[in-house]
Image (cartoon, rainbow, N blue to C red):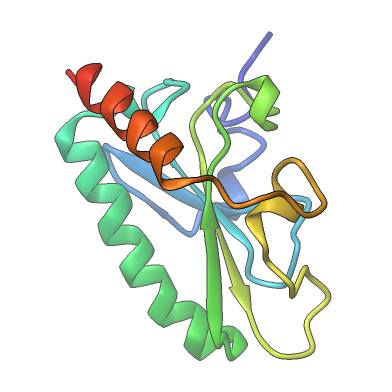
Length: 144
């Protein structure tokens, strides 16, 4: 299957910015006007596959885009996110960062509570300190 982000013939007219590391273009299914995607030119699936140069280029483009989206669409805030793996909602197997400009009255999700929006809706008990300390220990033990 041809990657829609690698096959630039369909994107060519929509590319806002491109260099040898990244490209930026509006998504074809926007949450709000100005919703753009940033992706590396190189076909990779996860953020840990990025080179330091690619990661820096992504970060710099986010900062630059925010200013443009404030001027262009009156953005008052932003959702900046990516999904990794089909289980987490990644529908195109090419890493891409969503930059969604937000303002009062737009049609997107306003109440952003990760426990409702991303997983396990409903109330949950707060984890006890002992459990959180054990999780901390496990993660620290397995850091590379």
